[in-house]
Image (cartoon, rainbow, N blue to C red; front, side, top):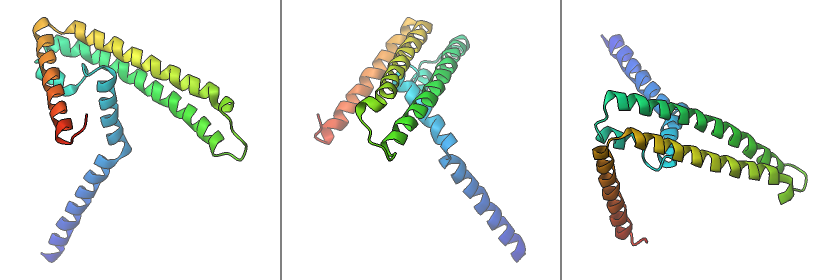
Length: 162
């Protein structure tokens, strides 16, 4: 009897530990961060909550999913390239040799170009999503956006921020 309780307790602890580890793992956090970045880059039109509130048809969901997957691939490529470039810059900054702006100018320019490209890709995806939505859904999305902006203003005012 006592052995069974200990086994059940250990199993519960192990299961809880695995859940905590999986939720705090980089893959879980990365997916959440990727979703948030996708929402920001598409000017809010790819927000899962917003899209859920618009009562999309299955056809609309399928079309938006194609756009989402394309942008997800673009994000991954962007992050891989930027990560490599930042590593190059970091290696120079933390290396033993003197470093000037000219030594990393090419990498910095490339990072800026990649940021501009992902911004343009996000805008293009936002337009694709917008074109999938009906006029009543666009109106509802605009209303939700206005309400959220009002809430953000109230929060800033509560904290005396401008």
